[in-house]
Length: 112
Image (cartoon, rainbow, N blue to C red; front, top):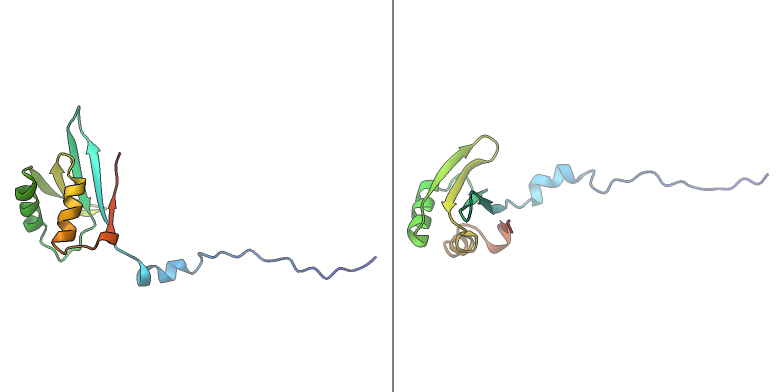
């Protein structure tokens, strides 16, 4: 018999070292979502804002700007979440960019 010199490639995981580098290049996203309540009623939630911001001041300006009601909810997993009445996704993203709170590439808009 003839012996063949074959090298079998080992399993390579390209994401194995990604866990170590996750904090270096990771972007902190601000997630803007819509939740359907009942009928035509909906709720816009904003999560992922930095902790050094004053959520109450941001909420006050958002409520005044868009003529809607809202509140800040403390969640165990997500931290502080801003809730607004109605579909305010585009308005909130434009407000956050215009106020210099976040950059455009840090915003993720979810929903329909």
